[in-house]
Image: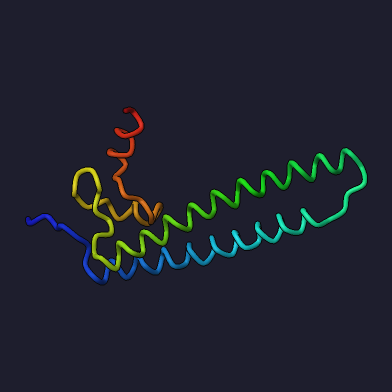
Length: 121
């Protein structure tokens, strides 16, 4: 049996739909976080404990927004790989990443085995 070196256009379309759904959700969550950060920044606080809690909440929201922005970048990069028809190819081995992994982590560029091996280095 011949080994595939890329996913078919139909398979790529399936992954594109998954990614677009995740991208829309991630963008919405990012927008909500940015609104929360901006709103917290402009609210007057009068008590020291409330101010400290507000600052911690704002810092946490900022970190979450940064992670969300990075996730959005990864999803957009995955969409670009779909357009280039290089999506789903393990960047370490050149073999196809299993569909199950891509459905769970659609922006993955490594198979599970390669990801584990990379972490051990």
